[in-house]
Length: 123
Image (cartoon, rainbow, N blue to C red):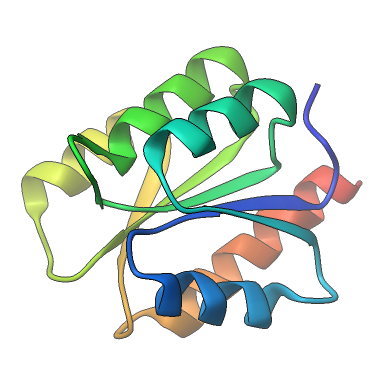
């Protein structure tokens, strides 16, 4: 069962994870994973209301986490952070119910969409 008002952040750049965690502080219970395997374990034990992931995570990518999350917990909102626009990745993410956004270019939009996702769960 999804935990209300929870967000899991997974990114290979700790500065990005820290920025996101700071922005979400007080709005949600935020967990940060630094590796794909750590995030995979967290998804299994505490499925979040929202998953924010970078694209590149070692030998895997954030889409793998989104897909795994959507299979086990379809209500989890998924967000993939891209450095640059990538239509193929955006199409794949959309096919799995996730949204791709560029960071830092679309950081305000990301925060807005996460807030909407959390609001839906909080009802």
